[in-house]
Length: 551
Image (tube, rainbow, N blue to C red; front, top):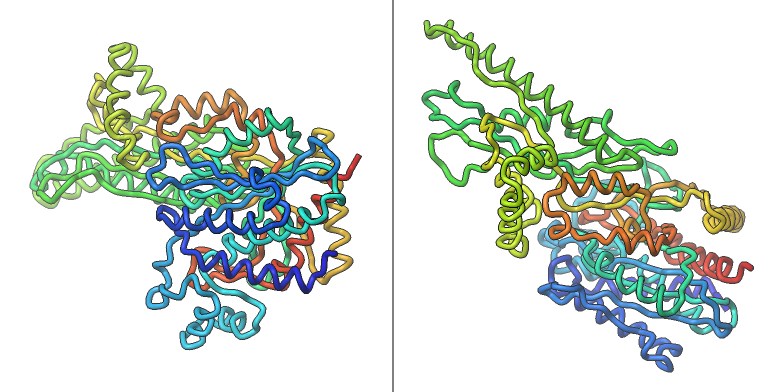
């Protein structure tokens, strides 16, 4: 029997156990948390009797040998209908905890220590209430992982209550490149083929929280925001600082690009009445390796760009237009400043020679390829072979742009616009197919019932607003849009190999029943226990039973 008091206590105990494991992305702790999850699964009576139904898959070519954990639960009455329960097992760093760093993964000790710290009023009120569990990963997303494990254990003890399969999957490497879920696509494809699985949907439990101060609405999501990383290589003209106006400072152009793009709300994408966060700068630097009195020769800047529906070609057109305007405005500014300087110093003023030039990677590649043919690919592959396994993939993409510019007949200053790693697909269940229509119908009924039984208020949104592994289970981008992306993404197949074919074949509608909390990725990260430890596992359990038992 599903007893809420017992479920709530199991949830808290298991969440604390998982938080106790230091599983920061990029460390061996990601292996430790996989081992912990595997050991918990093997404690279930069903998996003790069926040990082969718990297994791991090591991420290919991963120096840390991180791994995804799988468990397959089959009902007593055979059926191909399958629900995927998935979550990521890694966390961000604990460095933000400062002097409390050693307690970041010890929730009870941390909360005791936090009583001695000056906290914001809201954080202090939550701490004093007793309704919140603090700690790194408490909401993002070990409480969500715990919810899946609790539901899986209950269903494993009640295999006569449903007809179908529950596939559990825990993935590493979510907080950076989504490398775990991307690597796991081949395993999902294998199961789809060998086990004849018919995936009804996937359920993720990535964190949700208030969208504004005082918001207590609990959000269910039908899909996920996508992401592109548009990057600008700005080639200027170096000069001695004693003849500053004889050069063209790429930092000045990059700064103007940043001013026009960073947090520009007009660039936030919108679909189905939902608006993304606007683009924001993730990196801005010049490429001068050390100090001297020569001005920089080039700069590099890239932006996080969330996507609901805008296509890669439209983003290129949009940002190329902004780059052209930014470039022209800088040339005008330089001419104004140069004239003022000439007037003050008594020198003759002549208009500066700069002309705004903006080009996409694909256009630059085609121009250079038209001149040199396969020699271009030979040189680009040499860059990939030499650097792809030991350098930041964004920097490798930049180096491929530089390689093309070396071959460019036009050696004047230029802005090259391209895409860099990662590519995160966008998707949401639209209800256009019979399967999705039934999913949404049952989801709405479940939410309505839960609202009647509890004091919770729910809202169903189309797009999970932050990045999530669910993006890689289905995608809305067309083949034509993918082609434009690949043509403007230097070395994509090597630097960020996403199997579009596997995603299309799987085509799993991905819902998110998120653990609810506040301040993910902050020292004050915390999960709200009454909802997350009672309502979330109940929603998942009921939805699984409803979908698998529906004729």
